[in-house]
Image (tube, rainbow, N blue to C red; front, side, top):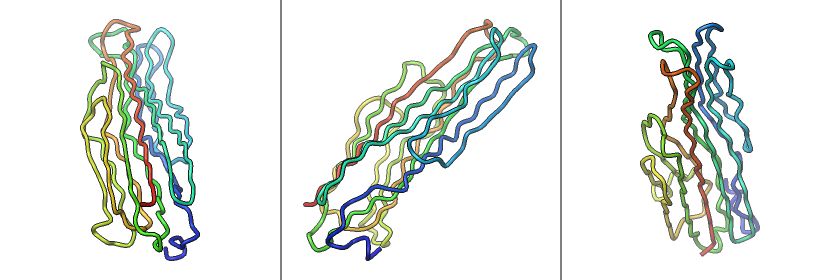
Length: 219
């Protein structure tokens, strides 16, 4: 860690990994059943792949896309991590046996944020979580949790916030943040949507857009 905190170093967000923790399942009247998962971890960017079914019978999907933009200088870092989710399923024909499908996701993002320059003082960090979801969002369990935890073990180098599943902008502002190497963790709630045993072809779909912006400036 000492080598990463030299005066010449620039701040960096690296080793970003995305775990979709996606799961789909379909039961059809004539074609059988299918089930699949996409867990990870994957490097970012990542494009989800779980989207399948049988035409005119049923479907299931859990698509999780992750992207990142970063800009750095010797005294600042800007990063925007965006996660787009689409999940749900289509009903089958038989009401009594509840044919149909569903999709579920419970993503997480991890990474390592290095704030160097111990010779120059401390850092200011602004983190903003921008959340937007469709009106129909299915079953939600849990919250969004974001944390930065310093590898030095200093208890004052832990910065975190939590929010329920919602739409809007949730900010966190921290001053006098010490130079350190920080583990980034961003956990999502568990999201599930599907359609079972209703009119054939009925499609239940939910979508969410979640953006975590991290801005670090040498103070």
